Length: 365
Image (cartoon, rainbow, N blue to C red):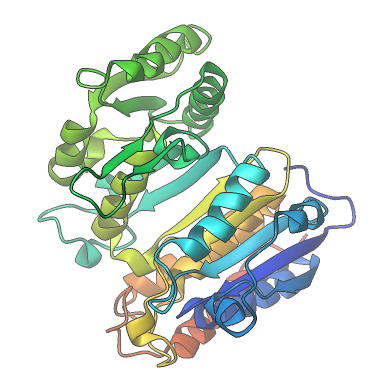
């Protein structure tokens, strides 16, 4: 996204459920610090969509609010889900409505290991785990084509259709090629599908080949999803940029989060290039630890960094990323989960202080 001349950004905030409000608060704390150090400003608009809102008032997010979102620069989401509410109701009402309504067709998930001790894989170091997954974000089984017949009977039948359009596949593949080219160095793009067992996914292979002709500097290969899961554990160093379907990307990126240090460490961007996009940690609402001030806010803070990168504040984004890396390598931040021994607020304070000291070390213009 192009950086506004006045460097002032309008951000919508959905704190959500469970640990969502706690980790969002720390993300905003770091955002305030890095804004002060980097010279940009921002305004926040709070949205109440959550289980509490639904249980108290019977209100879900209306589609009409999408027009308001389109006037923002970005959305920042905490987490959704509550055991008191029908499974998936809140997620469909908010996340899927936003993804489909704003056509956020890219789900971008960096997977990077900051410190060797965080990785559950034997012998893997940060240089081995540094990839980005480009997940198609509006089609596949998440498009909602299908349904259930004769529910609750012996003849119950449930159908969910995978939907792949040439337009949807091509824009995702093209984005992945551009990303692979921009990352420099390896310039390697891997397609992950299951086209041997699901012939409809051949559209991905053909599109990769045809679009690839325009990117002769980017090396490509394709692997089946089961093999990709195996390689992420045995040879994560083989991946640079991965492009895949909505369903497979949803699964593989959670595996990626674990190998980089835990679900509390990872962030994602729901992106429509050049338009308002949404950023969030990928962990769930974790209701069992909600309100205890122990959830790791690193995923949410990393989501803030992704948001700033997208908005054009690259120095600010790098300040946050470097701060997290240094806190982990120095062991000031012992882990990326709820057992670090530090409270949610303490971790946010650590990152904010590190951002400030990192900014002080930057060359002055």
